[in-house]
Length: 432
Image 1 (cartoon, rainbow, N blue to C red):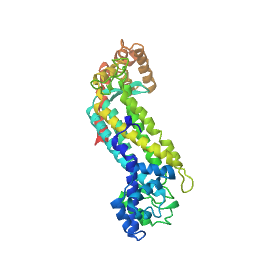
Image 2: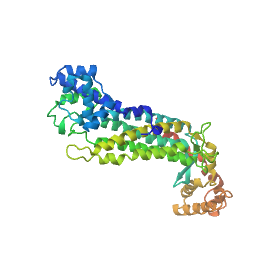
Image 3: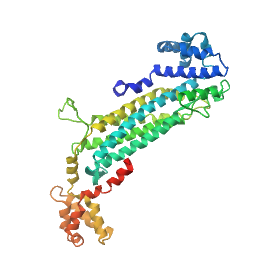
Image 4: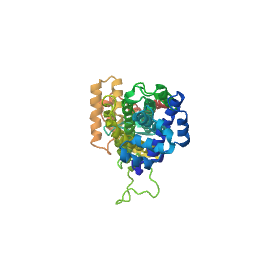
């Protein structure tokens, strides 16, 4: 995590202070139930509520000696609580605290990401509706294909992020599990009612079989969803970057007053935000493979996953939070140029209507093969004479074509409004 790509609310979740607060709450909740069932004195949870505290620097100091973070934490807490501290963590193992705490941090992070996603989705919806009937050229393989709507482009990205939000909510639910089952997960030294109590108070489900750790397929699923969301960010970012190219210039990132695009060339307005988002998406996706590899642990538990999660999870969550916030701003302020879209639509002299011409010929009785041949023959003439010959003129001079179609029919074919005739159907399906 570096400050340049971090937002405070998400960063705080992964700071030691928040982690140890969660640890202390888990230990306190566990003690409350243990005291209730007579496993430890009733004074213990009361002491924890009244005096329970810790010192981050002191924990670090102790850990340098004992080489164990949970023991260092418990020692620091004991210095505040006093004699009752000997009953804290009774029958529990480190993973009971670590894994349950990680689940809390992941759900806290997911809640922020869900809000981020909702902002992106709202921005895409607003801009899609705004440009529902803004005609532009659709491209396949980077080459002009047929007319489409800029709003329809954005509606497609809206759907992708909506699917991402649904997956994120499912992944949040999947990761929100508590495990307090003791060494190797047998509950030999702790009653399952303690686990149930802690889970209930934290708003979580109980892990059915935790061995000694929460199974890492849950974490792998969660991170994989983050990776897919990152790819959706990149997909939209790359589209905007292409549209901002000088030769296209159909849309561009907002360029604020006083902003500088290049240290050498004062005229430059570069797509720096979407380029940055493309890179950040790579960072988030880089965590997917390690998360998948963490699923395979030795027997009931090893810690090969630990170092990965301590570094990867905070980094990708902070990065994705920043990226989603940045993307929302890009979409909200995106500058759109309908006139440039129309100019690009006209750039090939009407070649984008080639399929409609071929279909008109087949509907008039021509075989598809002959119709394709006639249309392509004239299209290639236009390709070779862009700017001096239009497609409708080339067709109008083709005797074979004009024996089949009238000039009036030809004019009707070159009507771009036809490409919007079902736009309301799609928008109703997408937005209701």
